[in-house]
Image 1 (spheres, rainbow, N blue to C red):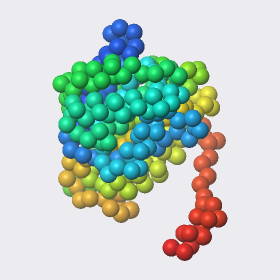
Image 2 (cartoon, rainbow, N blue to C red):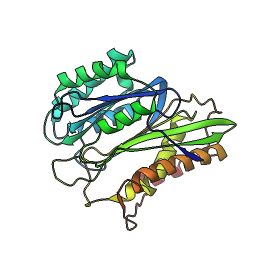
Image 3 (cartoon, helix red, strand yellow):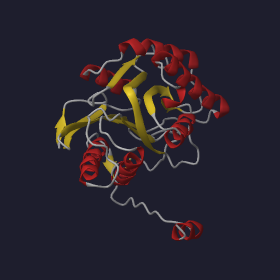
Length: 296
């Protein structure tokens, strides 16, 4: 495994753009668009807060119930949290705008927001922002850096990392960007993380890998003990590296898992977060589920 210069566009087939849509004060970057040339399998982990922002609910529907995803639209400045049905409807309108601009299905668009809680997002500016960003999409290092800047809120620096590994004689790349510096005020959201890879891997194995690494990385991060309404980590894998499809927990899976963990570890520990070694995650099955599992 080797760390390379790059971010969200490091993997083959991924493009990004960032800019100012007018959500924040004039001229400040506040919106990012990430796009894959081909459909991706997707996996995600989401906030355990009882109160979940509209984008979290939208993305859970996409990740859990739809076969592929192909784009991410993220705005900073307003979290679209505690906004009811109207806020969820704006997620759909955001996806519709991306669908029209990119000629992809609206149910393949992930939506994310971060910022002030309780305000409705200006959907006209979001839709116009998608149109603005579409022609700026590029696979360059600069495009990735601008996108990472556009999703920042109280962050003091953009957070990016990329690594490369060899799987079956093919070079596989994982790139990423992240924002989050803690829910330091009740009106501020916290962590959003987006990971892209050209690895060929099944949806099930991608989800398994993400759920293995998150408890050892992001779920051990704390700033003040709060859990956000908007926390999420999403991974898109488009398979363009051309490696043999990872379908089982074999050596190729372990190689990919180690690289994904390194990306998440870097984002969670080397950008001024504090790791809390006291954090313990316990999982289990209720009596009903144990009985169902026993019965096959």
